[in-house]
Length: 261
View 1: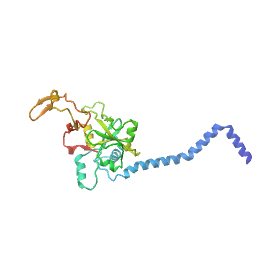
View 2: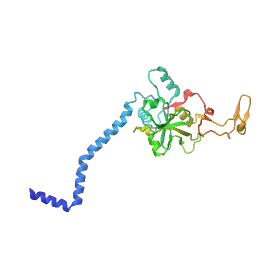
View 3: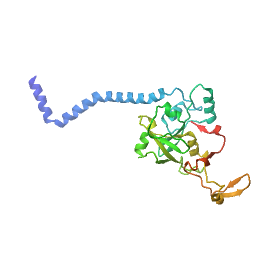
View 4: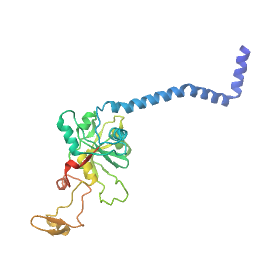
C-alpha cells in the first residue's frame, strides 16, 4: 500500500499541471451544481419578494405578464394603458390604497417612473440626500442611477425621446434632481421617479410657453383680441420646468382620459 501511495505521489509531482487541472475539474463537478442552485434560489426569492409585497396590480385588458414586468420591474414593454378616470374610480371606492404608475419614458436607458408620494411609503424607500419632488419637473433618483451617472441633488437629467425623429414635436424635458434614494438592492435603485403629471408633460399632454401677454411676447402673437391671443410658430416651448415658469404649464384635453400604466 505504501508503495502504491509513493508511486501515486511521484506521478503527481512529475505531472503537476495535469494534477492541478484534474483537481480543479473534480472540485467544479462537486461545487458548481450547489452554487448554481443557491444563486438561482436567491435570484428567485429576490424577484418574487417584490411581487409578494404587492397585493394587487390593476391594468387594462391585455397580457398579465407584461403588466407585472412593467409595473413591478419597470420593463420597457408597455401594456395597454388605463386612464386617470379609472384610477380615480378605484380610489373613490375606499377598498384599497391606489397608487398610480406610468413608466413609458426613459432617460439614457433608465426608467422614468411617474407616480405619487404614496409609492415611496409603500416600498419603504427613504432618502439618502435631499427632499421629495414637490412640483412638476422635479425628480428623485435611485442610488444606482446616482452612482453610475455621478449625479447629486441640484443636478439634472434629460428625458430621452422615444424615436430619433419625433414628428409630434415633443421635446426632451430637463428634470431637476431634488433627492437621492437610499440603496435597497431592488429595481428602485435604477429608476428616476417623478410625479405622474410630469410624465404627462414628457408625453406632450401638457406644456408651458413664453408669456404672450407681456411686452416680450409681441413677436410670437399671430392675432390678438380682447378674449383670445393666437400664437404663431415662433413661440418657444419650455424644455425645463422651474419655480419661475411652472405656473405657465397647462394640460390640453380632459385629465380623466390621460394614461396610467
